[in-house]
Length: 399
Image (cartoon, rainbow, N blue to C red; front, side, top):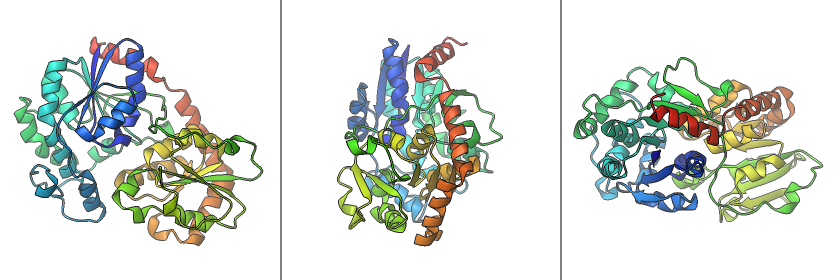
């Protein structure tokens, strides 16, 4: 089986597919990752073969425009982004995802025709993936990076129509005038049942979440020892800092929790220690240590609601507090709160007093840990990537 994997140039969207790519390679299948050039180093770090497809856009600028409530047409000539047809309905993200698809599709289909895949595996916002799969007449397998926000968006009035309208020129260019379903032929879903949304009808198959956060440093040895007091990990991932470092609230949370008697761990990107400023002695700062190494040694998590943080926390049965910024962070946080495994604290309400109160509630109210443990059990009961390889083979064989 030959599998073409694609994502736009955002490592945290590619990383959830890496364990599946490893499983496919280990089972003797051929895998090729095709994406904009700047994703190349992240792909190389996972050991997968890579070929550039498309051009890099100023995606950071586009996301900033969405965060700041600016106009939908966020791709400027200076950034090299393509012109995007105006979209008068649907989510503000539709023009961005359309621009990304337009920047990738022609080269991706050329790669696909040369490689001859049996299926295309893609992350939910890489709309070039299902378009190219349709052009090549092969299944499109979607791997969400967190709770399935894109399926939820499809339930919003006008969203699907706006998406089809925006992608129609690309679909026509590829000879698939009927378009392609951006939810794919099959979704491999690692979201635990208590966080699922209702009312979806697309085909899904369960997947056990296997964390991969990129290469990192080892865990400091003292964190693996016995704990004498509750330990909280505060982490803001990597995405928010790329969009606006001022919106990373790690230091604010640490200051709010100072003096509570909690043992605090700040998990930051490489070089992120300096951005924290002066911090209390009870804070241990770990730089570029993968979260799946940190979380077995803490009792709760405070973060931004990113999928990697939320899912890695649930995999360890940890209650969480989320202060989200981006739409997918808000969605993940909302589903987390709905499951009972965590609490959502809107950023505009995040005073030091409210942060302390919310974190202590998440830590001390037993219902949150119980719900997190239920999510952990759900995740561990799902098929691991090696087992899902068979599901993909059956899909290719028409099973």
